[in-house]
Each structure stands twice: as C-alpha cells, then as structure tokens.
Amino acid sequence: MNHVVHSNGSVQNLNGVLEEKLDELRALIGKAEGDPLRIVGIGAGAWGSVFTALLQESYGHLRDKVLIRIWRRPGRSVDRATAEHLFEVINSREDVLRRLIRRCAYLKYVEARLGDRILHADVILKDGFCLNMIDTPLCPLKVVTNLQEAVWDADIVINGLPSTETCEVFEEISRYWKERITMPIIISLAKGVEAELEPEPRIITPTQMINRATGVPMENILYLGGPNIASEIYNKEYANARICGAEKWRKPLAKFLRQPHFVVWDNGDLVTHEVMGGLKNVYAIGAGMVAALTNESATSKSVYFAHCTSEMIFITHLLTEEPEKLAGPLLADTYVTLLKGRNAWYGQKLAKGELSLEMGDSIKGKGMIQGVSAVKAFYELLSQSSISVLHPDKNKPVAPVELCPILKMLYRILITREFTVQAILQALRDETMNDPRDRIEIAQTHVFYRPSLLGQKP
Image 1 (cartoon, rainbow, N blue to C red):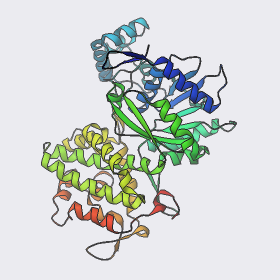
Image 2 (cartoon, rainbow, N blue to C red):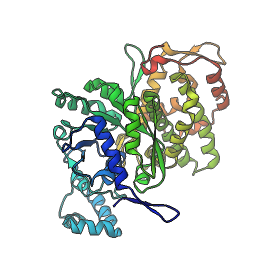
Image 3 (cartoon, helix red, strand yellow):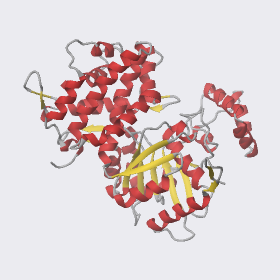
Image 4 (cartoon, rainbow, N blue to C red):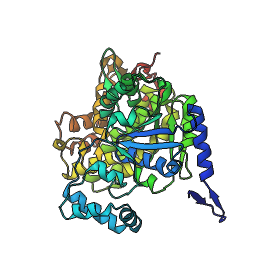
C-alpha cells in the first residue's frame, strides 16, 4: 500500500489518488477499458532506470490499467569486480536479500561472486540493479531486450538514452511505427546537444532528433529535466523537475508524474530548457578538474564558478530572448551537477590521473559522460564567424567563443587534446582575462540574441 505519513500523524492513502491520476491520463490518451496504458523506457542508464522504477513503484500495482517496461540492449556482461561489489550490496540490505531469496534469484549472485557464473546487465536489471548505479537497488523491473517488441504499441516512450545514441535508436524505432494510426507521447530525459553547421549553424537537441527520426510531431515530444541526482530521487530525497513542451500534454503529464518527494512543474519553453541542460554539463567537467588540481580549494573553485557562470549567462543571451527566466533553473541544475554529478566526477578523475581521455566518454559504472560531446557542440557552434559579435575591447567582430575562454580551454583539453588538464588553471590565472562581471555586462547591454541557433526564425 502506498501511503504518506503527515506530521500530525494522519495517514493518507495514496492508492486512490494514483488510480485517479492514471484514469485521467488514460482518458486523455483515449484508452479503452481492458486495454492497459503502455509505458516503455528506452535506455537503462541511472536516470532512465530510476525514472522507470518510480513509475513502476507508483502505478505498477494497477496491472489492469498500466504496463510499465524498460528496454536495454542484451549481452552486456558484468565483470567479476562488479559482481563481487553487487554481492556485498545485496547482503548489506536485508529487504533486498529477502526479496531475491523469495524470487529464487539469489543463487545466481552467489555463483557470480565465486566466479562460476557471468551475469548480464539486462538480467540484473530485472532484479532492480542498474549497472551504472549498483549501490542503489531499485524495485524489480520488466525488462525487454527486443526493441521492436518494446516500442511497437507503446503509448508513452521515455527516452533515457544519451544524446549521442538518440538519433540512431529512434531511426530504428521509426521503422516499427510506420503502420501506427496514433502517435505516441515521448518524454526525453537526455541532457546532451549536438551541433549542426550546415546550411547554417544551429544546435540540435534530443527532442529535435526524435522528431526528425520518427516524424512524431513536436506537440507529442516533451523534455523533463531538473536539478536532481538519480540515486537520491529514488531514495526519496526531495527534488523538483520541469516537464517542458506543448500545453496539451505537459500539464496532465506533470500531474501524473508528481509525487510527494518529486514535484514536477510544467513550462512551454522546450528547446531552451533542453539546451541549458546540456550547457551546465560542459562547465561541470572543468569544475571537477579545478577541484582536484587545487586540492578542493574553496577559493579556486569560487573563481572558476564566477567565470563559468558568466560564460553561461553570455551564451544564454545568444540563445534566448529572455535569458533572465532561465537564470534560476540553470544555476540550480549547475549547482547540483558540480556537487555530485557524473560530469564533475569525470573532470576530477581526469585531473587525478585515474581516468584518461583514451578511455573514451562512456565510463564503466557511470555511463555516458554527456559533457564531452556538449563541449564539442558548443565550441563548434560558437566558433562560426557568421554569428560574430562585437568584441568590447578590440571593437571588431569576433566569433562568440572568443569571449568564452573556459569553453575554449575545455575544447583544447578534451577534444583536440593539445593541452593537458592542468591548463584549465592557466586559463583561470590568465592576467589578460576580463572580469566575469564585464562579460555579463556585455551580454546585458548588447543585442546578442541569435534565434537561428535554436532553429527559430527571427
């Protein structure tokens, strides 16, 4: 039974409320009695798995009315060290241990611990273990490894893929939707971006990739993001998020997704929020580098924070006509990513020498580091002379990236690899660097807005 205990000691039964919310969404989608609402998560990274698990925990008991599943690729094996750690996690949690024994699933983890069996990511996910988040057991999930089986009749699709994989997978999905009469609703959780330079420079976001690949109208595609860490949300830490998109779906979906510990607001500005979700990952990597290189110096981290936030403010003035509306959400999302996000973690590990760029940006136990491709996308986009801005000191047109020294240095460290990680400190200590306040003032006093960067008409 789902219930919440209030401070006055009263217990409010939530099952009736949840069923009512589910019925409202079913009616809006047009589901007939006896035909369950089909929700499928695509991609089983940390956030994708947690998001699906939250839905399963809330609505999974209403089996006649909703079917919740998650797709992930088959065949990914779990190495011995991870299997040993997983066994420790299982035995440290009495509730998880009892559940596995009751489901006759415990023995395979014993055999894997002894090296007598190889576990696979899709198999352990059925028992509630996400390979990128072993320390946080989830509820058991219905896992599908055949993509066609997962999506062909789905009513709601949750995109939990990295932006670098979204286009390829949804192009395959589009082949299975050719005979569909009604279009599904798609909620994208991806926070990466790609750059498209022809015929004119612009950013391509995951929702736009999905629209191009499948032909599903943008009205049916939404983005959900916010300042959150997947494991903490699953452990019922208070969090909030925004679901952005057309009013027809965002308001009922916000109500459907809202929980006592996970408050979901709604907003009509889809693409801009999506791009901001990618932008903060860029600077989170640099923050991790600075923290590690300065032995967690609070002063050095604050200097970096001043410069990176001023660059983000400058970039938002290029991308949106009313950037002040994004200041709060962007700063909050940046803050939590710097505190505990995988991109900041990646920067720290690079600076400490515990990871190398040769390992790529898909890291065992963490998944895809979205900030790396985002650095490349934003640098390439802002390097185009066709979107030049007036340099305040030189009084001549320059590419916008010339006013973003941190972004330039991250590109030269992570992408072209012409500098080592230590160069991020040189960029901070450059005596010719402008006061961060000057960059903000430039952005606020000049007309920089370039609607074409988001594919919008002036």
